Amino acid sequence: MSKIIPLPEVQKALIRDSFDSEGLPMPYVREIFLMQCHVAGTGFRDLKEIEPNLRPGDLLTFRREPDNVHDRLAIEIFSESDMSLGYVPRNRNEVLARLMDAGKLVFGRVESARRIEDWLKIEVMVYMRDF
Figure 1: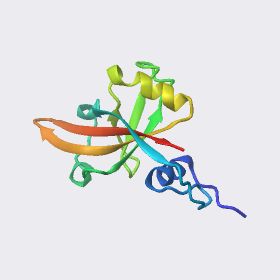
Figure 2: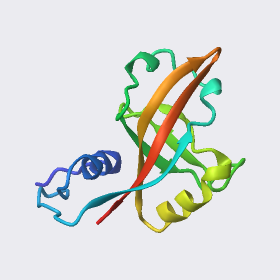
Figure 3: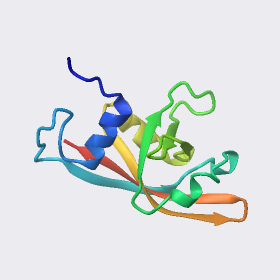
Figure 4: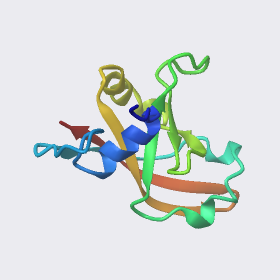
């Protein structure tokens, strides 16, 4: 009987490696840099537990939230441990949301994380994995 892998784990594996879910090599995989942004909404979350563990290069997964009452193009950003960090800023999310809605794999990596008074500013490099 084959093991069912939840989507976030498959997604993480595809981001980290150039192998498909069956372990077969994918020779034409490319990471395409799309943009840099900060994580919006970190001031509304208790991130004290995860803050010391955020390092440059850490993988961030993105999940569309089309039913978000405040922004139908919302994209929530999660740490590798699946903790919600916040959102792609509303003024930067339209193209990313359209790509994700079209089935493209969009993700991020921590560029930097620093505290500015009560605000944890997390800068993110956003990529698309092209197969």
